[in-house]
Length: 456
Ligand code: UDX
Ligand code: ADP
Image 1 (cartoon, rainbow, N blue to C red):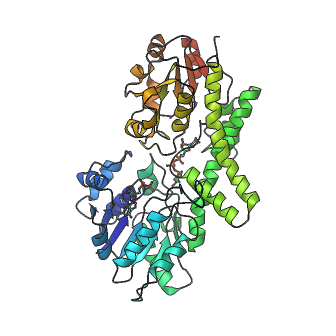
Image 2: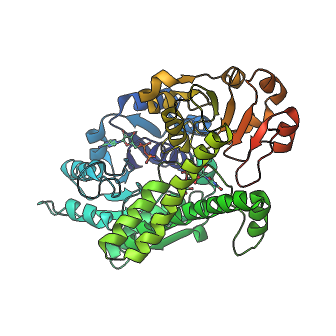
Image 3: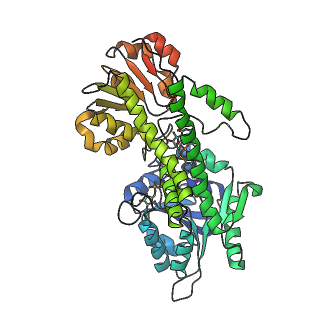
């Protein structure tokens, strides 16, 4: 039985290893993390992250061939294949601050693998890291005096939160980058291919060189983010000119060359990947003197920021140019539905801006309140948290829909309206609700990329 170890049991490492363990009973998988609390949660069978279907997936293999541990070094010693799935946040200091990836955790992991290996291993890079870091990893690992050779592969993760289990089970493709020029490199790539062919059709498994694989991940996220900024830029134009963004999205999306997905207008994209990856791309383009290319991709992030600010400006303008001491019910804080994750959530910026304008907020979200409390800790005086949306909206002047949780569609808005201050406003940052119906109930409704429906 081969031993797989995954360093980092977060949103990527945990679900990915649970899927491999469930599909490959002939491998023994240990997922390690320096965060003991996270490990204890995984060990108990209650994953530390909310992800539909994950609990059942973990249960299939936990204690059989899936193990979680905080003993990072002991696990590395046992491993034949090491997946690296630690976080690579944006650097907050020094050269490249706010743009480049902070590789300290990642390099520490490389050195840890080196120190605790007495035989060759395959190292698989799963974290999103800027292109050419697998090369840096290979150089660190192969610098050992004992001449132990490591093969470093890139195997980027394309799963999206909220659909991680189905994305892992039925991926559009699996991408593996390795040194295809050498027999040892090709053998390492084949080792990884062998794991995935337990459940993924062979024709969906692409193999390429390491650089192209790493860059494909950055480019894929940049393209997806760019689609959202593109449609969001058109919402501003549609509002200014009286067009309807839903009609536009539908018409654009039916062009088979464009496709219908990722054209949902929003208050902005969030999540741990998009902004980080686009900024990384921008940073590297600048490094190579490709300023026009860097400016192009920078525009994707700038429009995202603009959309967030624009949403708040529209709220303030609609509410008679002041929200001082007005209560706003924030419906949804997660960066998207079906997750409790709030990293880079557009709700953070909206809440901060509203607090700067001295509004009072009550935030409700089915899964993200624990993270919301942490994100808004600095604004305690102005923010309350309330799991029940009816209570959150009671006495409010406005509701801001910031996450597209389907349960928000099912609420009784007559009841909500009756308990709100008048005039009552809904600002739908996800175009989630039935705007005409809300208007008929009495709300002043501000969708995205459509004319407002107002009584005043
Ligand atoms: C993304 C990529 O999709 C995934 O392949 C990669 O591995 C990690 O980054 P994730 O961040 O989990 O996944 O979520 P995703 O579904 O891509 O949504 C990202 C953000 O874009 C969310 O805030 C979402 O609400 C927003 N979004 C998405 C829109 O505003 N409109 C859309 O049409 C689609
Ligand atoms: P992602 O979304 O990329 O999975 P997360 O932050 O959810 O990001 O997960 C990364 C995990 O990696 C965290 O749980 C963190 O504690 C863990 N981690 C970071 N550095 C190390 C390290 N040197 N050894 C083990 N685990 C680490």
